[in-house]
Length: 303
Ligand code: 0X9
Ligand code: ZN
Image (tube, rainbow, N blue to C red; front, top):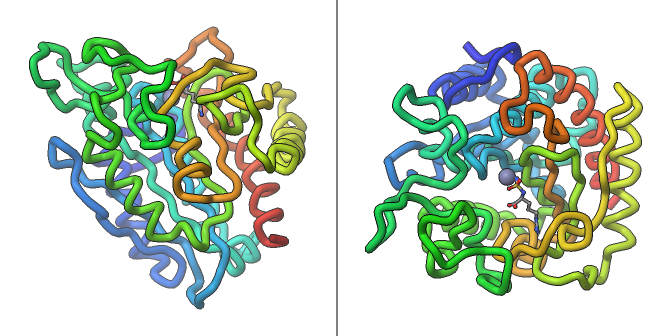
């Protein structure tokens, strides 16, 4: 069963979701919002005490297959909100949480497979007219799509898919977010690595109109994260602190879906182990990052 002492493949994560939802039916429901290209489930967790008109936070993990700490952290958030509800009931009483722990399930499973590739990034749909497989789902969203920092070549790691929303997984994420966009205040997409707390935009060095607010919340969240073990994060807009890239989900969440706050989190580390973060770091990573999520939740409660 799922623990945070090692990394878990999709079936173990799904079993965890099913079991937790069965134990806490008044707090958590899981649904399958679609199937990936290879027929894996696209799971959506809703954590809520019911009622209507509540503000929401949407979190996804596993965009990039090899970033194993991402689903590991996102499942930790689920556990914390549900199993540890009594320690901080206000987060679930006042906020609806929508969480998709593994949005690239085919790629994720491939990184665990004996005949797979631990460092696979993209999804697993074969490309027409090419021997190379997969699209970078974080270059596939329809907001300034294909305007730089993505590739038109199917063999590239940052292949944009050839058209916006060419990928079934991207479309399922899009439709899921659009279904709750009017209540969603914050979109968080969890990646690794680099220890960055990124705001849009990726398509331009210009800053979003609400950048001061985006930045202010990020600083307070990162302060709490750093306070746990001293882990340093870099905060800023994607273009300004990382690189130009177009078609990522956070740009679309703000620019396309109209969600006021969107962030990409790049979790541990800064490159010593990179995507292959040792399992001993899972719990420390998750403990410190959870402190930041609490700050986001407190702000959403005040919005
Ligand atoms: O390049 C990416 O997709 C992300 N980094 S990663 O190493 N996890 O692949 C960064 C995306 C940042 N978001 C925007 N540029 N808007
Ligand atoms: Zn990533």
